[in-house]
Amino acid sequence: MLSVDDNELVTNTNPGTPMGELFRRYWLPVALSEELPGPDCVPVKVKIMDEDLIAFRDTSGRVGLIDAFCPHRGAPMYFGRNEEDGLRCVYHGWKFDTTGKCTDVPNTPEGDTYKNKVRIDAYPTHETAGIIFAYMGPAEKQPPFPDFDFNKIPMENVYVTKFQLECNWLQATEGDFDPSHVPFLHSTLDDNRTNPQFQFGNTRNNLLGSRPVNSLEGPVPEDEPFPFAVGNRRFRKDDRRAKDDLLDVDGAFYAVSRITRPDGKEQANVTLRYLMPIFCPPGIVRPNHFAGNFRVPIDNTHMWFFRLRWALDPMTPEDFVYYKQGGYAYPEMVPGTYRTKASVFNDYDVDRLGQKNHLYSGIKTFPLQDIAMMENQWGPLAKREKEHLVAMDYHMIYLRKKLIAAAKAMRDGIEPAEPWLPETYHYHSATETIENGDYEGAVFRAIEKAKRSIFEVAQMVTASSEAAANNAAI
Image (cartoon, rainbow, N blue to C red; front, side, top):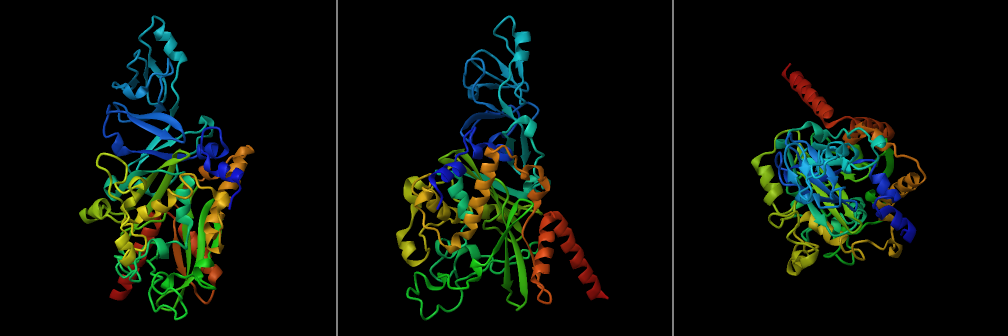
């Protein structure tokens, strides 16, 4: 549980709050590129961390993110004329460029000089992988843009969209840090044999060395009192999932585990869990695709969920059909909106018959299974002082401690280090075989591999495969 004060500290991202100021030291997603489809297109309303803003793309294709209200008399800039490299307020004709500079004040004789005394609040933007990012902090604190691997790929390698959630950013984020919910919420009642998350079987990600694991396989213990509803879902003493070592590597949150592979060899897994302040890699992906879950506050009881999938090679038509229309990895959307058809307003179309016979939750789509739980934890802002946490909540507890420490440091005037370590944002998960019982050595090698970009790892894998092929040909 958290105290009421700590819960307020870690969930409130409004301007001037410790967490709000911490968030404003990072580059954050604010919109999708598709929302501004071309030069001089219709402006878009954007609300991030309780700030009302307008995004527009100027004649040269640059993206501006400015205050929603004209500094003259507060007229709404959403209705502005987007033309000739600027957004012009229709009330009195004042015009502003993407940097916030006033370029024209035509409604008064002194306008040619007065325009130099006026600015509209504006935030720097950066566009990559179909996402528009913004830096919303003090200009003198602006860090370099993070070195995400997806910065380096063309749009044909990307699928990304967003949808609005009716809850605080933290309770949605915490769902990615709950290792004991997956065998319940995301399972099927046939021991996962027909579970869509295992539709790719034991396909291994050749770059990261990971493969899906079905913990429900095998006979149910004879002493299990609820063989159907619980079965192999029960976490028992000495469960491997309760033994992850949690640590920070240059500010990146990692879970380290030791597993035995089907071939009998032991393996060290270093799994990336989180990059400050909102970047989480988990998610259902197709083979050799990579995932990003980014949850950004709209205000303290609403948020945007940016859901990114990308690959080193162009997406195939089958990939796009799976993501857009498959109905499992992504929810179906209300046409013309960024809202899900199944939602808190219709109880997520829960199928009670399906719940009895097939889907553990009765909710069809993978992210909506989580969202149904996230949006309804004592309402849109969870009352964490009422919680009764258990041992398997240890990943989430680690995350909370990390965030609370960062918010308190910000409150005390200590700036975060992570924005100034852009290379950390290409860190990823990795595995290494344990040789001669040297677990620590395998962990060290895996961490060093995880620090390399995906592109470096891909080159290493290609070189290794070519060498093996050459040796076999000799």
